Length: 325
Image 1 (cartoon, rainbow, N blue to C red):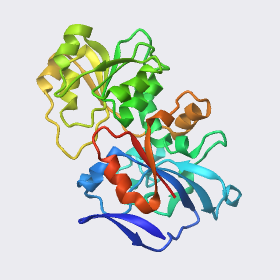
Image 2: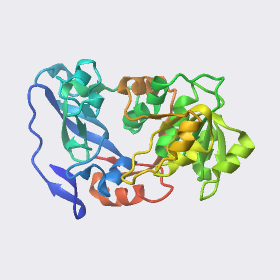
Image 3: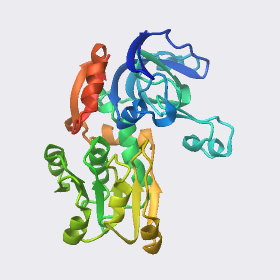
Image 4: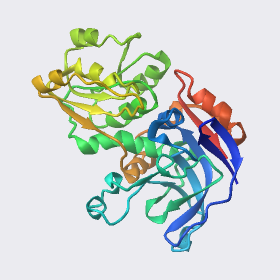
């Protein structure tokens, strides 16, 4: 099979054997993948990753020894594989298993290949009314909606999302169902227009971000969701959160963040890290058309042109780049 290898020399298309599976795994023929900011960070050295990346995918089950009735089904998948025996796994939270493997990120080859394997327990069947172009967003949408599972969001609160990138837009589109006053901040007018078309308030700012000006004009916020993709984004969030407010941190970067801890301590601000989420919840939102990710698609490339697709994905301001097999 063909696969894209992330290595010391960058990206390369290689031939490698189709993965062999055990009784508790399935073999998936990949149909479509999305290129994520995490993939871009991996090529820069995040997690020290070498191998086949790709964790946003939709595919077809080709082999399933333990559950043959799902062969031919279209699926997406949870990307975390815990050890199954530690205290975290025993309480059903393999996402935080110390020995976990993460599909396409840590210890488990991902979806930038014609075939991939997946633990059977991670498989989620996709409803017929969800097209591939939407199903491929299930993993990032789950990450966006995870915020609603971590903190209680109501219409009484002032909520702001920093960053109009792919994840920031998904967060705004998802969380608007919990808070109709939500505001999205960014510097790309065409992306903010997508949010505005869904009745989401927007603020367009220049670079560098003038967050003090936001605080002066709009006041301070109860909940600030940081999805800028920049290491310094957490300190920008600190400038506009109210005392005793909450910052939800979404950015994962290979660059270290220097946090103004004095500000966080004195103002008694809660900082919550937020990572992966519930794929079933994301599929429910897609099934019921509560979130339409189609406007977030920048372009779709054939797998043969993966290098061009990745080049487009790293272009500043690009929306979601998809690759079709």
